[in-house]
Length: 82
Figure 1 (tube, rainbow, N blue to C red):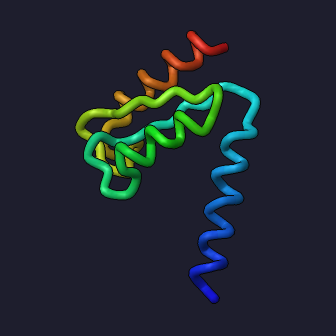
Figure 2: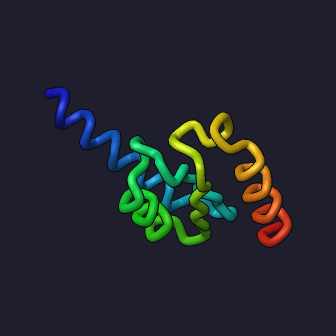
């Protein structure tokens, strides 16, 4: 059944996220209708080295909506978590 397959795939992805050993930057557009704030927070809780940043003036296409905000967030993350 499709639902059982989707549930199994979701579990695989959450388990994989938890096993990433390096620092992770989770980027969420503040106006995203794809990645909810709750799911983004769950991702941070699931991944031991994750950092969440919300980019203002951006929906799910952060790099198109606010490229400077994304660039700043990535640069700060790279400098602090290197």
